[in-house]
Length: 349
Ligand SMILES: [Zn+2]
Ligand SMILES: [Zn+2]
Image (cartoon, rainbow, N blue to C red):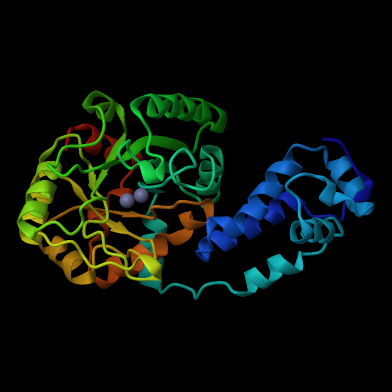
């Protein structure tokens, strides 16, 4: 390693910007607001650190495309060896500590089974999601981008999903032992309960999360049929955010109507995990249904459904609800050793 004496007391500006982006995303800031930081990280990573230091000293950082006033100030402070004021403010807003029981479950989780990259509607590329998941101590991250019919979310065609599988294989080689990106999809459950992707391709994936994203207000009986058809499909491993409700924000909507007894009984019978979705605006299923799924003997996954790296730190939301609804830890698939999880999901339901 080269020794740069004059930089001994400086901080790594890219690491500081990455931490800022992470904290903003964890606080559920819009991708738009975080983009300035993520963009600056990309711009700076392309440059030699000496050049960055020279530009910072000359007050010329903003000549780099992607670096603005706020990000330039952070870099200058960082290079002076100071915690950037912007970062310090965010660190001071740290979330409340979790209670010991929740902490225990959170620690037992080995990975996350539902996440999105910028291939569909996520805000960051695959490698950034993977690096953040590894940094959080996960053993794996399942990448589950959307399926073709969800055009608003830039759902992946079979061809694009195949390209992503190659990209994941390459990334896993680069990442080495100790962490793995698992292949997956969040496949739309079509109105007739069929799945919105080629079955042969679905069969190749490590984890298939199936979710309803359209016609959420269809009559209860039809919705029940639709969900049962999906749950009975041996390709499905996880039933994503089962009620589709939105509890906060400007997209609030009620739960879909369906016969939860029948759907959870089918999940239990076919070994399909009921997802406990940790997104603050979803928190799905509602607690009364979560308790019902526990009663029905279901297994679960606790997922972030992260659309940005910082959102990968939302598992605590799901853990809090799981603890409150007395979900046994050994029925949460992501507490299982990876090989056991993969054996269960590959065995066709
Ligand atoms: Zn979804
Ligand atoms: Zn999702």
